[in-house]
Length: 90
Image 1 (spheres, helix red, strand yellow):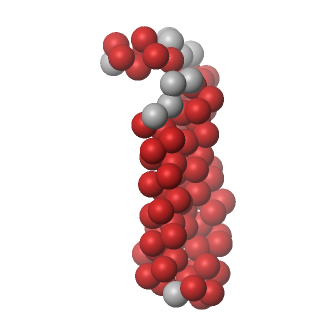
Image 2 (tube, rainbow, N blue to C red):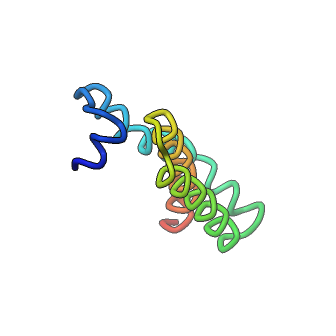
């Protein structure tokens, strides 16, 4: 995508892998706490909290102007994803 390359530059394969895995690793780690959160506040509120964190990360990622901000937004999205997906599946 030319707009992506204009904003963030050309990414090496290592950086591209880092950007992709930034959402996966926090999701895997935060999924351990999704059940505990659902027990504390209830399933619906746990899912809503995870979705809200995901939305905050999506807003940060969508408004990013530097690569670090994009990676941070994806990490926040991963935390939210782990919280709501682990609760939805159970």
